[in-house]
Length: 355
Image (cartoon, rainbow, N blue to C red):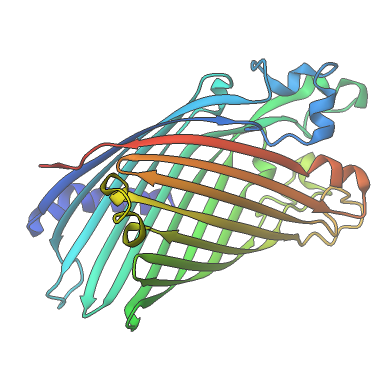
């Protein structure tokens, strides 16, 4: 994955300038928000904070306020595919989320999207995402703990990096108002030196169906991923009886309506009003067959987020309610791995800058 990342950067920096870049533009946005549970703590863990404050590390509160910064550079070039006399569209995004109450949760990420036009209504996409050193939370290090009474003293900061690459093909004229995208993905999650037992390789398949008509847009996204805990049985104590592999299905539905056709007759100021909602559901099934692996054996969860948003001109407000419910033969696992989270945010989108 590291070599692939270097090749992508090398292509953008050294190869693409040769093939007639054009139509440069930059989109910037700024946002603020409040996250009720950025560490995704269970209710039982929150109740234990008075006697185990180390779970919050340096933070004073479970919740955290934050602000977002994002910039997207877009441009075009001749096709990067041989014998294709079409344009290729690029979007390179840099984003940062800075938490004020839980500074460890601050994170930055890089995204690269390449849209190769193949012909009439047909596209080939290459997407890459990289997020380094994402702080998950404090966990006990299974390779250090030898005395159960010293668990709190062995808490370590769990951080990991995500690299994800995907390829997709779409036909943007499946019917008069719809398009279909099919793709494959490969994700790699690498943890820091204290938690390499969590490392995962995650190949996947996905599909996306879009429908757009009369100012109304709907999207259905489906995916299947199989996570391989490739450090299982690598010789570390923490990998002897714990297999963190899983199978995961995702279903996402979004709806958007511009309302222009209704509101412009009432008040011209409302001409740029739009709103919508998103339902994002993850269904995970741990595949450990180790009966003594109480944390993962026969465990599954449903992680569902509901988001409502409204946008007027350059201003957008979003409300998200997320809930994870875990099923396991062990009641303590169900309590530990279930949580609730509520996020409210405001985003301002600056006008596009053409270069």
